[in-house]
Image (cartoon, rainbow, N blue to C red; front, side, top):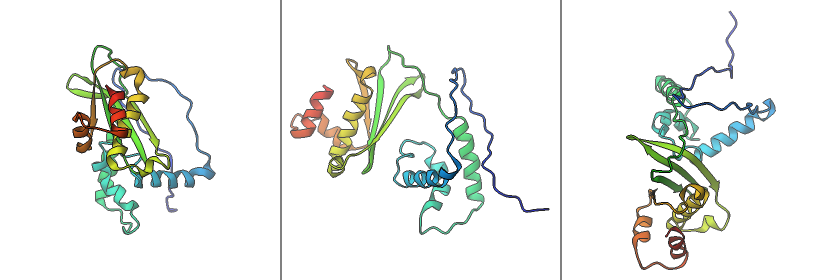
Length: 201
């Protein structure tokens, strides 16, 4: 019996509940570009761009640690179990919800040295459901911002990105930078943060 080779063919199902699906033509990556795409995915994952808001990062930890240069590549039962659990989690990923204009919106933002990310969501029962996602890279000037200013930029950018939902409405902002929360509550602000605070108010 000849040795089995690798395959890229995978079958999976995604549970959408009562949500109506939208048919789209698949975007196929040319075979010659697959190595380049893999390199970019690895790079984005290392820079925490495509993992920033994933609740599955703890599940994927045994897999992502293999991406480290100093890590010896050993595939064990730990990696196999993580792969199975991750497949299950991704097949049950949350479907984007329709906005309810009678309820408050929640804007969650974060920033890293490379880019900004934002999630617009709402509470549906006891569950928080995503409505839209957004992200962008920082320009060369923004990369020089302090951490507080970078996080503040993330809030302002997220609010502008989803202004069609948020304009003229009260909404909740979630940021993981505690100093920014304190500053936005303070009456003694100046410069860039003061201008941003005026925009939000």
